[in-house]
Length: 87
Image (cartoon, rainbow, N blue to C red; front, side, top):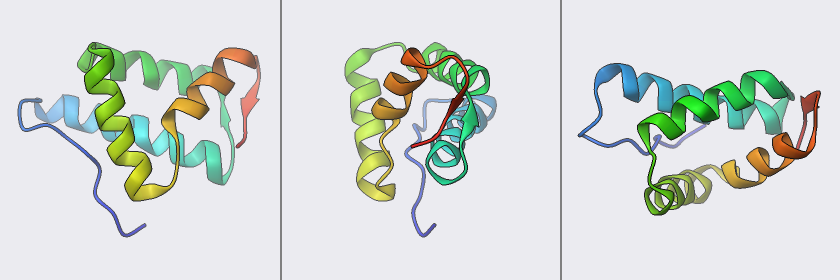
């Protein structure tokens, strides 16, 4: 993991921590799998911090470019499944 998480200087410390937690859940979905409820809870908090769809696309795109993990695909799979998400 040799990359930085995309964060905004406008966010509070708690918001930065919560956005990083969301990206860590995305990583976990790819690496080990994650419970759908935990993923959706992290995504819900992420959307409270980043309500704009265009900003979400930009931030998630930056994360995908650096990590190779797609938050979009994880969330789509979470919306379809009821149990555990494993990419």
